[in-house]
Each structure stands twice: as C-alpha cells, then as structure tokens.
Amino acid sequence: ESAEKGGYEHFMLKEIHEQPNAIKDTLRGRIVNDNEIVLDKVNITKDEIDKIDKIFIVACGTAYHAGVVGKYVIEKFARIPVEVDIASEFRYREPIINKNTLTIVVSQSGETADTIAALKEAKRNGSKVIAITNVVGSSISREADDVIYTWAGPEIAVASTKAYTTQLVALYLIALDLALKKGTIDKEYAKAICDELKQLPDKAKHILDYKDELQEFAANHFNSKDVFYLGRGLDYAVAMEGSLKLKEISYIHSEAYAAGELKHGTLALIEDGTLVIALATQEHLFEKMLSNIREVTTRGGYVLAFAMKGNNQLEGIVEKVLYIPKTMEEVAPIITVIPLQLLAYYMAVEKGCDVDKPRNLAKSVTVE
Ligand code: G6P
Image (cartoon, rainbow, N blue to C red; front, side):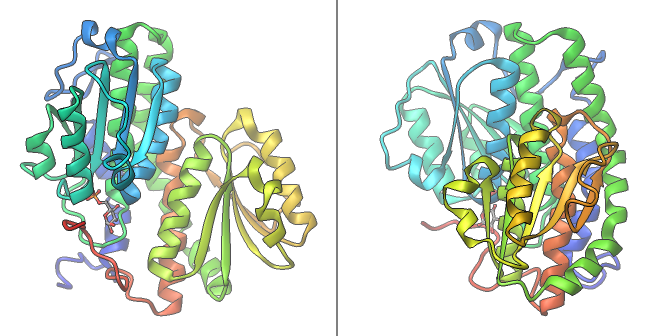
C-alpha cells in the first residue's frame, strides 16, 4: 500500500497533489480553436438546447457541492434555470420533469444508489440525462444518455478531492457548450474563460505551496470545536465543500453559510476565538463580504481569509490572509477549494484521525 501512496503519507494527500494533472487530463482535447467545446460522448444539438426550459443537477455529497457551482455557472453562461438537488430528496419528491428538462447527474463512482435511482426517475419522465462520472463503464455511465468522463484517475481516499475539481471542470465545459450553442455567451468572453481554464493546472500547482503554512495553522487550531465557512456567490458553493471536507475527516463540527445570511442566525454562535474561514475571491461581491467579515471580527471571531492575489484589503482586518493565484473570478472555485482540502487534511492529521478511512463513512454508498 505504501508504494501505491507514491511516497505520500495518505492517499488523500497524494490525490490532492494529483489535481493539477487531473484538471489537465479532464480538459485535454475538449477545448479546440480557442473557444470551441468538444464533448465526445455528448450529443446535444442546438435544437434540443433551445427547447430546454430547466436543468436539474442531481448528486450526493461532494458531487452535490460540485453541482452547486454548476448551477451558478450554467445560469450565468447559458441563461437556463438550474435546480440542484440531493439525489435522495429528488427521487422521492415527484420532481417536475418533462422532455424539455435536461438532467445532469454527477457521481465520482457512478455507483451511488440514490443517484442511480434519480437518473432513472428523470429518464422515466422523459428527460435527457447527461452523466459526469469518473468510472468508465460504471452503472451511471451505462444508464445515462450521454457521458462526460472526469479523468481524475482512481480516487481511494473516502474524502473526495480530485474528483470534485474535475467535476467542476466538466460542469464548466457543459456550461460553455450549452451557452455557445444557444448563443448566450459572447465568443470573446468564452475564449477568456477557456484560456483561464487552461491555466488552472499551473495555478493549482502554485497553491499547493501553501502546504507548510496550512500545516502550521492546523497545528494551532486543531482543537477548535466549531468552524464556520463563509462566502458569497461561487465562494459560498466552495465553502460548502470546504466545510464538508473538515467535518468528514477531522470530526470537527463545521458549517457553511452564505455570508449575507450570517446575521439571520449564525452570528449568535460567534464568540471570542471562534474560527471562521472567509472566502473572498469574488471581486464583484468583495465589499459585501468585507462587511460580513467585520461582523465576525467585531464579535471576536478568529478569521482565516482567502482572497484573490492583488487584493490586499483584508490585511490587518483578519488574523491571516492567504492568496489565490490571480484568475477570473468565474473559475476561481477550481483552485480555491485546494487550500481548504489541505486545511481539512492537516487538521485531521494533527488530531490523529484515520484520514483515508473516516469512521462511519464509505467511499461509495451503493445501498440506500
Ligand atoms: C460518499 C463519499 C463521498 C461522495 C459521495 C457521492 O458519501 O464518501 O466522498 O461525495 O458518496 O459519491 P459519488 O461516487 O456518487 O460521487
């Protein structure tokens, strides 16, 4: 097993490090001529797209969190309403689906029982189903109409890392494909997004350099009882995934909140020294985020913030700021999540937890 870990102490750490390549592999051959999207196993015509009046993204766990990012991006680029749902909820709530609905199911393993059931429910009601999965030949890949594979390679650690980042890449590609065919996105803007996507593997490599700092931070904070993750827009979606990573492997209670929702409840939980992870990469929401951060610091909260390189406004306001390599804010989630994975990892290691096999959890939940 130690050979399989390639010199890393845990599979999770190895898989975090594999992300630059996994992102590159998932992009390979799918962006051509600057801004054309080629998704080999997806056959969706302009005609079909024009008829779509709603998209469902259905998944569980980390894949669900990828779907939340997908909603923001598809709605922004393709201007089609998107509903993200948890598979175990979707399958039992008589969702309103018809032949003009497109369903996207997301599953690393392609074997999650609830997601398979949701896929079947969508098909039964006449929806076309596109699957995003990491396992060639998996049940979900066989049942879906069309498939986009994430080329993350086998993921062994229960806590998903490289599957998530590559699921995001796949969702961005679908969003661009739909938008370009529908004509809701400017060609130059699509090119700019494509250029940014292509640069992400390198940027992901840079962000791995934060390892030592995050390890040190974890050594000082692994005794935290509660941790709150805050963000707005795409940062909120990433906050959800960061919070899940922490709780599943370190057993520290954590919650993600839309920062604007803070004053409607969570603020009551902030006391002297409460650890708050504030994501502030979304420039157009930065001022709003800044005032939410102040709401926390005023109450004594201890804030670790993540901001976009070049924006130093949080210095001196929060305890610590780490910078995400400069990128268009639209694609920031794909790299912002990486330091959050590392933070969760080091918190769990400091606590002496079984990082790769957290208690009570399974890699793939094939029974209901
Ligand atoms: C389990 C795993 C999670 C994963 C979820 C969905 O709970 O522990 O890491 O996100 O299942 O799995 P899937 O294979 O469908 O993406």
